[in-house]
Length: 248
Image 1 (cartoon, one colour):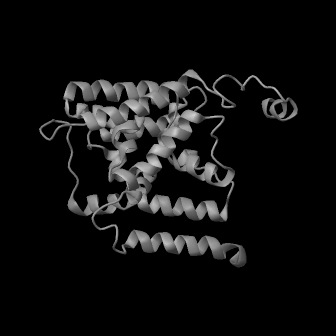
Image 2: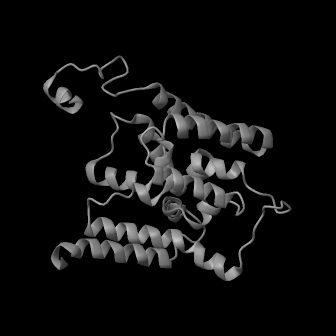
């Protein structure tokens, strides 16, 4: 009904002194948080442990539970196909731009390190090496699990090419932060990944997050000018997508 009213009505309640963008308090706070994140990054404030914990709590509450502005495979897939929802979700669009442009421009991963609510929770509950709940993986298992996020990302890409209507929201725990509408399965997934990270430091980020793997791939490093396995995989997936209409 709202979309129909926007099309049929010349003047809508979204048009304000801020422009034809639907601004909410959550959007304003999200963009303000992004600005503060940049200031704190270059001022060295994150190196102070007490301040760092306060910042992570703020991210969980404001960006996660209140605004629900998390970057995910489902979001990237949807906006890649239908366009970025600048006017309907300016805060989410801004945080997505920071997540995608930060790695190649700053040689870092500002979203995963400072802005992701799920990552913030894992940092807050991260066990220390001398903690009784600290668990260490064997080298073989660590190597295998370390490839899991990239494998999941490739499977999701292939699934989108073959079944464009597939819902990727259930592939990651981020939908749980929209707890007012989230399914029980999403909530269970999120709680399980947090429980794992309570004994395995940053367990989901390191061994389960395909979105984080994508952002790491975009990060500019000293070896970015060399052809790597991830580059060959990306080219192969692109060729498959281009040929799929003729194959299927």
